[in-house]
Structures are given as structure tokens and as C-alpha cells.
Figure 1: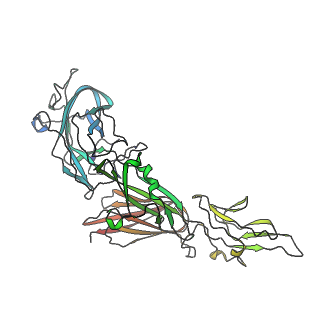
Figure 2: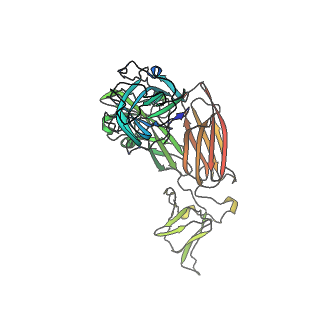
Figure 3: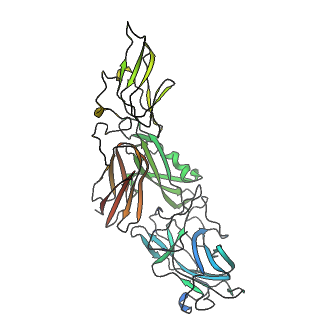
Length: 478
């Protein structure tokens, strides 16, 4: 677990089933941070203390929002609806009795990727706790009001005493026992505060039409995945991160996705506290429906066999071919359904192993007179690019480039496999994972919405197997 983070996003933390802790991928709320913290009970500040901090013995290894007893806030808490408290987890190399802490709370500026505004109210207290080992929890007894934004600690000063007696002579902040018995964060350093939020949701379907990524979703079915009691909340769905009225989805019960991966943005508000809101995302994945394989028929003849066969010119690995209860597993070679009764008018389907998507039903009417040449054989994994020339390297196109707040990626791969598409800033920090998972052969479209900013240079990185493609994106606020 990181103790201190310098000029980087708050780190990832483990989440409970209905609790998502803001960290590297925290979702940012467009509201004004308002923290109500009472001024420290003592006029002393770190500036009043003797200089010369040389010890790292007591350190803050975690900061999180909690109830007054130090229990992390769960999914039953709605930001803005009540008091919360700041808890810290401390580590110490030497047993101590008492520790004094003085710190400031800052908002996290998503656009600039750095701490934002100071709340102007320090949190400070002297805790007469017994400290030993790595899991010492202290909770400030002055509540704060938190409005859903990501927050961090800065200007943090920790002091302690010597000996086996309680260092704290009261609850107010006090300086260290000696000049060396203290520790300060350097300017610019910060500690992320873990904060509760709604949970992101995701779902997948098979395309409704072969050769496309069209599928209909009921977005309201994801509400229970985002909060534990959806009936207590109002949900508004949008197609863009700006959540403007012209991007609102008017009928969320029947939303049609048309790309391999689509992000839906959701504004969630507590019905009992209309100013207590949070933003969340739903990731929709559409898996392609298997297409028509090339196949021929062997018909019964008057002077020959009384049965026939369906001859599949070339099966595809990862596909099953099912006729009745007979299943043929594809391996790239030609295969056949045999011993088919005359006049039975057989029908079969193709099933994708990975996604479970099932093709339309194919029958004698779809048969060819002869198998095509090898270069023209059809693969059931391809979608809109079935007849495009095969390639050895994947390709990635991003358009428009420069872009304002939305960009589309066109990814084309020759063979199916695990792949990822990620976005980084110019400093090499990962900002967004556009897609990660199994990618089918052929052309895929991915849309990404980014918050507007004056100008930013971004890097996209696509990985597929041992292949890697990267390129630059320029975001300009038009």
C-alpha cells in the first residue's frame, strides 16, 4: 500500500460489493467542494513547532472517510446527506503512546490532474492511542461535510513524544516531544482519501444482426448494480460525459448500442436529498453474431445412397456447428454432417465458444454449388469486414484527430484474441482503459468521451498478443 503519492492520481483500493473507492479511475463530480470542519481547538500549528523533523517512525499509510467509530463508509451512505469523519491508518516502527496530527484537505482537480482548492479548514487532533505495528486507526472527532468530490490530504504534519507515558496532554494539536520526533509531507506531496461512491455497471449482449454491433439494452436493469437500494434514487442516462440535455437518453428501457463497446454516463441522485448526487458509468459490450459459413450439399440419388450430407467448406476454430443434437467443433478444416435423411430439410446454427452468441438458422437455401477458393472462405468470427484482405498486423485509426470531447477508434485485427486499448497523458500516466478483453477478428469500433480542456496531448496504446500499436491524439476545446 502506498504511503505517500507525489503528483499522481489517487491509487487503486479494494472495493466491497457495493462500494467503489475513488482512486486512479475515480469518477469526478462537477460540483463545488464544500467542507465544514471546525477550526482546531488550539491556536498551535506546525509553524509553531520546533524545526528539524528527521524521523519517519510514525507514518500515514491510508486515509479514508468513516463514521465516528472509524468504520469506512458503506453503500448505505449518500454523500451530502450527513456527517462523515476522517480516519487514518498509521504505522510505527517503535511502540508509541500518543500522536498529534495536523493536515489540510484539498479537492482533486481532474482537469489538471493535481490537487485543486484548499478547503481552508485544517483538521488537527492529538490522539492518546497506543501505537504498535502497521494497523493503528485514529479518527478525528470533528465531522466534515463531503459532497462527493475526490479529495486528498496535503501539508500533513505528524508528531509524537518519547518514553512510555501518554504524549498527548489533551485533544488539541501539540508539537512533538523533541525537534526530531515529527514527520512532514514535502510541498506538492499528497495522500489520497478513500471515498465511497456508486458502483460502475457493465453488461454484454450478442448483436441482433450478423455483420453489425447492434443490440438493444434496458439501461434501468443496471440500477441495482450501481446502488443497493435503487428505489431510493433517481437515475438519468446520457451518451456523453458532459451529461448535457441534448445527450440525454429519453427511453433508457430500450437503448440501441451500435459499437463493440459503448460507455453510458449516469447521474444518480438520492430522492430524499436532491442535492446528494453521484455520477457513474455503464459499459455495454456487443459481441458479434456468427455469420454464414460456406457449405455445399450432397444430395441422395436414385441409384446411390438414400442419405445426404452438409459439407462445411472450412470450419472456424472457436466455433461449434450444431444440427439437432449433433455438434461439430471447428478447427479450421472442412467437416460435414452426414447420414441426413432424404427430404429432412436439415437446419443448423453456428455457436461462438467465447461469447455464446448463436447465428441465424441456416438451411439448404443457403448452400453453394461449390466451395469457394481458400482465400475467399468465410469465417464466422468476422463481422462487417468478412471480405477484407487478411493482414498480419492490427491497425488502429482514431478520428476525428484533433478532437473536442469524443473520439472514435477503429480497430482491425486479423485473428481473434485478448487485446486492450488504453489512453495515457503526456507524462505516461494511464487515464482510461477503453477496452480490455477478448477481441474478435475483423473491424471493431470503440467510442471514448473525455472531459473538455483547453489543449492536451494524449497517447493511445493498443496491445494484441505480442503486438503493440501506439499513436498521438490532440484534444482541443473547440
